[in-house]
Each structure stands twice: as C-alpha cells, then as structure tokens.
Length: 389
Image (cartoon, rainbow, N blue to C red; front, side, top):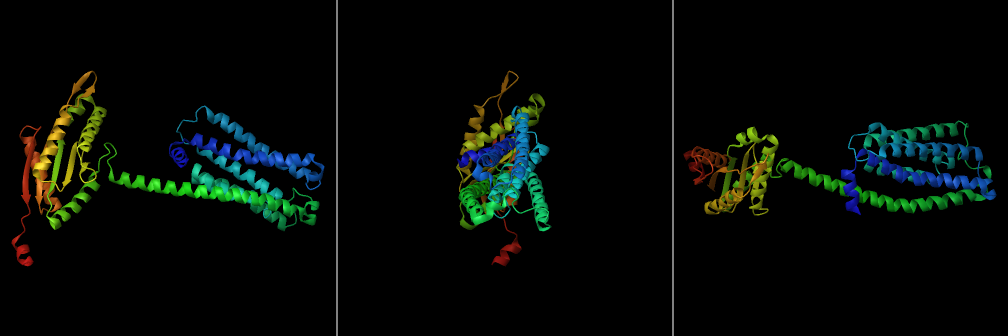
C-alpha cells in the first residue's frame, strides 16, 4: 500500500491530484448533509435543530459539491495531462476549507468534530496538493472562523446556531457531540499515523533520490565528474596509506564529433548511454567506479587493482563494444575507445589524473582504438624528503 501511495505522489498529474481530493472530501460533506437533512424529518431530532441554519448550511455544502462535480467532469478527460493547474488547485483547496468551516460554525467550534477533520485534511492536502494552494484554502477557512468568533463575541450570532436551546438542555448535545468527536478522534489517530508514515517515507525517498542525483550523470546514470574526483581523492589517500594497488583509466570515445555530425545529437546520446552500459557491466560493484567526466570522456577508478588487472578490464570493454552495433537511418556502426591507464604508486590525485590524461593523448596520437598503460610513482621534492627525515 505504501508503494502505491508513493508512486501516486511521485507520478500523479495536477488534475489527478485535484480529482483525488474531491473523492476524499466529498463523502464527508455528503455524510454531513445526509445527517442534517435526516434530522429535519425526524421529530425528536428536529426539536434539537434550527431548520433555517441547517438548510443554509446544506445550500453551502451543496454548492461546494456542485463545484467539485463540475471540476471532476472538466478534468477527467485530460486527467493525465501534466500541465500545472494552479487556479483549479486553489479552487479545490478553498472549497474544502469553506465546506468544513461551515460545519464547524453550525455545530460549534469547540464541540463539533469537524475541527478534527479540518486539522486532518491540512497535512493530507499538503501531501496531495501543493503547499501554496493548501495555505490559501486554510486561510479562507480560518478567516471564516475569525468572522464567526467575532460575531459570537459581539452577540450577533449564537454559539452553535444550528442547534436549538433544547439541544443543550440536560447535556444531550454534549453527549451527542462527545460520541461524534470520539469516533472522529479514533479515525483521526489512524489517519495521522498513516499521514506521518507517508510523510517520512516521502522524506526518505526524496533525500535518497537527491543524494543519488547529486552523484550521478543525468544522461548516462554513471557517476558525475564531481563525485568521481571526490572518490578519487579518497582512494589516493587510502592507497598511500595501505600500499594497495590503484589504477585510473581515462577514456575518450573515438571520432564522437563525427557521429554527432553524421547521425545527430540524439544518436550521440544513445552512443554515450551504450558506452556507459558497457562500462557498468564490467565493474566490480561497489568497489570500481565508472564515471562520465566530460562530453564524450569517461573514467574508471579501479581500487585494489594492478596494471594487469586494469588492462584486462579494458580488453573486456573493447570486446563488448566491438559486438555492440548502433543503428540509425538504416545504417549500423560501432564505436571504439582510446584509453590511458595508470597504476598509481603513492601518486597524488591530480598527478594521477595528469599521467592518465597523458597516456590517453598518446593513445589518440597512435591512431585511436588503443590502450596506453604505465606505472607511475610519486617523486617527492628534495625539501620534502629532508623534512620527513
């Protein structure tokens, strides 16, 4: 169930969100209208009510329900359209605020369970709709509350005008209100637990997603440049501390500009994703880290891997790309890579990148579609050696 709610909150269009709010709120309003209307036709209940206020409240609720119906009919055909609907969203939120505020006035702000409903629908509204619309709807409802309270204090309106003085005699109104309030309270506790559960789940989901997006390249799904070089710094420090081998592979897609010029940039993006999939397929997860560090430039970080191991990875990548054709406009082609590989011997991160880039340029100078690999060792300046001694 939580997965269904999460998927809806992530993928629902503004129209679908408005329709859901209408579907959730309408049963409450219909129940209020039905109970009040039934009270007018039962003699024992009728004595406890003030018909003119009950009828006026039903007119307000009926108007809100009519607006709901028109809104759903207007949105239903294009409910999958992702276009924002700010005015419609505000209208739905405002109608919800007016409807429940009307019920609270009718039965009394302090004795009627509509207050609990109002408190419950605000966080639900924030989950389903946008914050701005809910704030506007809540502000409209609270303004009605303020007007109602001022009218009561000024003696212009009785408290709970929907009930006659007989309803308060002998505590009957209080008993009825307590029963109703207790019922709504128990339902609200369950609702609040569900709301809190969903809200924390949404928080965790978005936090995890944002964290992943901050580390990943949007086009290929590999690590982005920032995350890759941050990890490179960490692995270089670890390599100098432990002495374990560490290799860096810098990669460039051969003649990528020609692919863009011949087949278009969309096909170029397909090629980049294909290369990324091949790189990811031959990695040890989560130790190895493939990344896109530029337009058609990739890199692989291979912790605890010596030069021979890095060359084996490069050969597997080359072999996979040779058997991966790309198709466009009835034509097929394959892609080759130039790769520069360095095994680090206590190299600083910037020096490791420098040597790997130099090997990459050598590979391109030798005609591309080749690998140039070396082992490089950090050479400390004499002053540094003397200071260490």
